[in-house]
Length: 572
Image 1 (cartoon, rainbow, N blue to C red):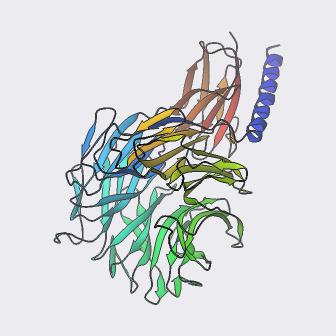
Image 2 (cartoon, rainbow, N blue to C red):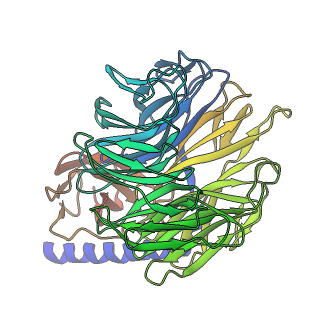
Image 3 (cartoon, one colour):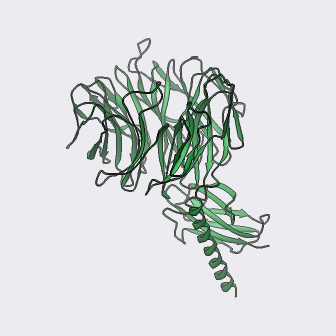
């Protein structure tokens, strides 16, 4: 009899779970909401903007913030000071993913402008931050690196990469690279083997990266470097060969599951050469895409060109496709809007564009992929527009309203859009808000970093007030879309996740395979409401359920590599 009851329970659980998944896909445009939104308690009269964000291996949220106000005060009462008023410093902030609670803050500073551009994590508990600094020195804690022009009163830009511990935020290492002219780091990525890839472009005639010297005869040249994540040592660094006195910039990099690195940027030289691959420019400014293997050898490349000038903003990979945000323009309208901004899907094998989204009054700036088969892009809009029946509402016409748009990776069809509810306006300040960063846990949650100007902004029922309306304040927020694609990606086999007893009345025991040591655990009731959420820190998890109402529940485990759903019943 007990076996028969359990079979019946499991059958019922499977049926309800299938019904829920079907319902989720049919109703994919509802119930997307802001779970939390946080900002600093107060700032100065100038700007605080989130340059980049990522999720760590521990499932928490990490944000790199550039600020030129004299001070930022956080809600916990913590202060960080900028002693060089008007020049940018960098703050790296860790937030709890479930609640938005501040966990720690670290500061990176020099004498003049220091700006972050990228932040990524690896599976070994390390956070990497990269950017550019125009100070004679750059300091974090007790560690300092020096600009190659350290004897200059106002040196040109050099680049930095730092590694921090996820747990404490303590510095593991800091590295500086540069030459005698301006050099810019624009992108970072970390692979599964503990390596870090840094990309950007340089104006120096000689760029020093570790023991490697890269040269250029151009106005600027792209570079890509591979670093050992343990100590920051440079494993290799490379650039391209090009014809003419044009320029080239690397703007975005992404990794595939085979360890290849894809780099994207622009160029106006007549041609580019990467090993055996030659790319020819067709118009004034074109986009290049190049794939490198783990040894830094180019194995694939192509040019994207239109009659207009083309500028890449962001790329992301999913299976055999590249997703790109590209601006195409001849000139700007009032210095703000490109003539066309596009989001597109490119087939790597045949180099064909499979679909493209291009809308008036829309600027796409970032793109990320959920392994369950959804694409998320963010940007800003100058007017209300309709995408496949999904409305992106511009709260203040002409001025920039930020948005997040979800689309299906296969068809490119829009699923839902999210923006803020309203501005709290003074009526004389130019209202604008823009999302600069976005990341997803591949498990029904998005995190965004935006900045805004004016008195305040409302995200659903959450109100965020600006500390100084004439400057920019930043907001980090969490958007729940948990019903979309629940359990869809590589799934854990039955012997990897064991849940018992089922039915349960007091305690549910969850045992996981030893390799599942970092990720998240969520429990939903039969209505899809999130009941419990925690980070996985142990292979034996006990859930106290004696106070939960009887009924059907679904436990969802997710790591960066896989996820799984287990149904169980509570009976009292």
